[in-house]
Length: 322
Figure 1 (tube, rainbow, N blue to C red):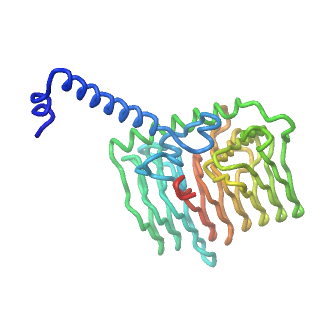
Figure 2: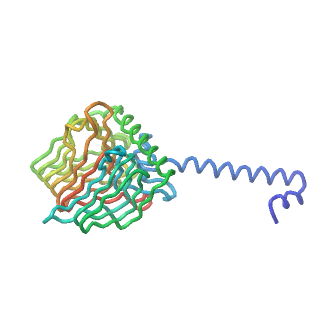
Figure 3: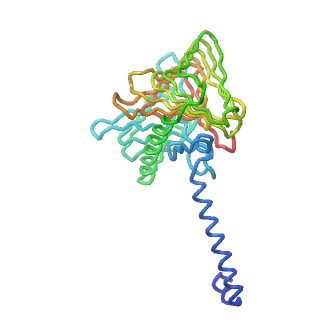
């Protein structure tokens, strides 16, 4: 029996009660839908920084893509822009992307050569192109439509808003103004005493010579590190997370122009969400990732990303799996 037929057989009072119950359920369902549109990661819950379609880390439901790489560099019809370059020069190990990628810029191009591989799907503007050569492998599916165009454009807006908002956060009392570690040194920063929220405003973040930077915090807490000049992780150095933190709880917000260092190299390890956006003059940065045992675990968001010489980029897991 349909709902209308059921109502017709009820007394006026019972019909009204049934209608109110149905309306309440519909309202609660709509309310849940609204809230599920927000991220559940620490970056959002602690700081209100929502990357939207550019992030998709920790979202409820798990029906949207989770990115290993999100690029936003754009070109023109006459001059496409290579936003993602995955290359394996002769004599080097092959670079590998384990996860979905997004190319949000119009007329952007994916170039993959040698024995490079992408083991996830690609979400691209309808004007984007792909150039494949050698023994390169694209194991996933290319998704491109007017609807995806709109979502990618929204992602670009979100990432700019997050970068600008994060840059305005006040640094935590006693936090460093620069981090430059070498010679196998170690440093640990713990957000427990600060209510699970820790902010750094750094000129440089440079690790070399097998150094280790560890960020510690309970699950659901968060770190934001704003870096205005050099970001360089090299020489078998590591950025590690402990105490329950996941890559989706830690934001490295790299500001400034293309004149500064921006690389992860030399068998190093990076954990976190890395976002690069320059709101001023001087152009956007290109992130370079190289080294036979170099590994990133999280999400990389930049104007352009170059992965080479055996480096591996792993996608962030869904919040329920982290």
